Length: 193
Image 1 (spheres, helix red, strand yellow):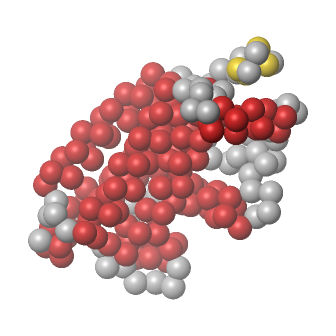
Image 2 (image 1 turned 45 degrees about the vertical axis):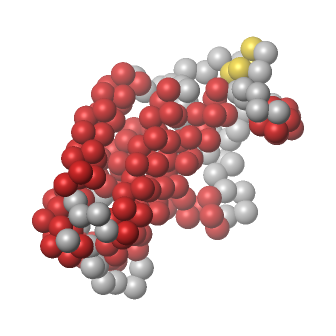
Image 3 (image 1 turned 180 degrees about the vertical axis):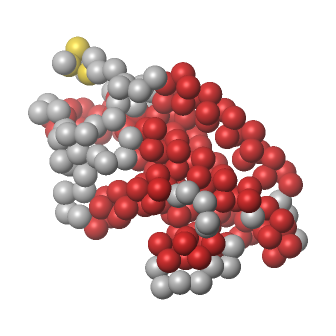
């Protein structure tokens, strides 16, 4: 239901535990950033990780709602007003902002799915093979994010019919990213120190 320019949708997930997980993950990320060598390759990849953290945190703050189906029937008609508001530096719809930040976060996680294995010296013809080459742990959610972003990049209609990645998936993918980096901290320190 649309009230003014705001949808009255609520997240299907409980945001409090996800926020808490993101706060805990931020501690690991901060420690890695402090402890790892100041090298351009590490800094550039970690800049993406910090950007993913910011995007997902802001998506939670603005009340991101998982969209398993097609856009709301009135979605398209609001885009011209959002364009005007953005140009005038005025507030836009919170749910649109939440989606913007969510998309930013998962796009950065997808880039890291490709870049982190390279940072770790992985070999393989494609991102999936490189990930498998360096990651004996779980990366199911991270790969799901990577696959969804490829649809954004390559399919004409993107994900207009609905998403397959939820906020829970994205937070889990962020955790899987940090797990791989943490497990390889000594390797990174040696390779880039």
